[in-house]
Length: 499
Picture 1 (cartoon, rainbow, N blue to C red):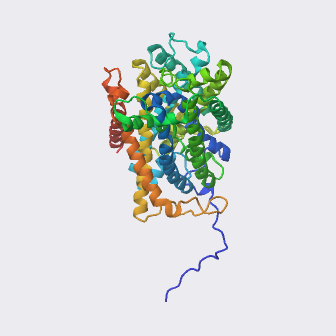
Picture 2: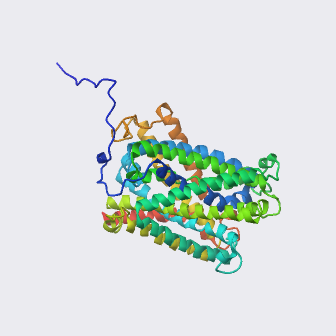
Picture 3: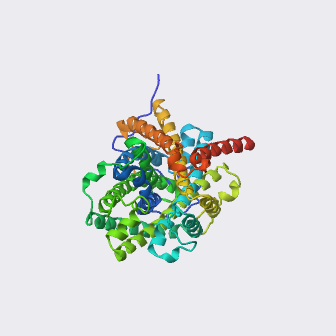
């Protein structure tokens, strides 16, 4: 005769998850609330930074119709974010992408995913810091300390971008070493300023429209056809809408992370998607001219100063500069937590030092340096060629998209095999069921993987007219693929030597 343990009464809620149930001791200071968690994701996306940075590029290749790439990319990224929200509730651990991949598909798989993500985050810090050149010299000519031409595509503009970017990364590294509360405070103020700035800019643009809405149905004169133009134009949206996983990266510093992180991942991306879409559409409709070439070279900065007047335009550009600084800070913070998480597992060189957390500040200072120093090193590539800016921008997206695809791919395989995707925890800190996609989990997961792989291929495709328009720099054309191959080869060599 067999006996079975009776089930608990249906009215008894499952016990809430606790921080002590995590597989690591609590070293980072758990002080971040829901707004701070949202701010981490929204600051990384940094709509003002990235839209101002790549608006001119998207418009230059796809014309006014490039605004349609925005909702398409948003749908794909929301599918990815929904998968991440499920994982954030079940594995609320710093270094989220690395941790999730390892728990879904094994340590080696997790290591390579984390390695690609670390490199992507280092390069994205570089690319974000270069955005200061798009804003500051327009705001005040005194910020152009090298040469006279501030355009990022010129030699003097590219060199000045390196100077401004290096100063910014030095400051963000310092903030990442001071204190968790200072970091949250700066992020909170920055996100508030960015949201206010987005609202003001959007209202200003839509109340100063110069173009008919029908212009967004045209791509302009594109040699490769409309589809080719839109695929290239989608780079802008793809570059903007990454980093929403930062709320998961900071789980060990978040109060009630199983409940908070899944929601802030989705709300950060949704808010950024709505805000960025309004800026793109408003920028096209408020442009004084679509044919004088300035919109394809100066982007939204040209629209603001031309349509809104010098005073108001400069005031809004100052807000954009704040967003660039805070966005770079958030990007470095996410990379720092990834380095810390991998080092804590002894998965990186000098792991003992990189995993050190200062007892007073609760900050992994050496990990912050490990992100900041190579980010400055990548800045120097801008001195070789002004076109390196685009190569750096697309490379960071390719690396991040590859890491994202590895996570959602492992999650899909696990679903198809009928295996659990969590650690057995069924309730969040308040005793409520964990975030779940329910019956939509499989189709959303499939969409996330198909979209992620397709966009990564689109970004890395070696188009000469995009990556090396002047010719003579073949390595820029193949830069994303070369960096990806070098990352995989270096990672494989390191793991072999470790064994």
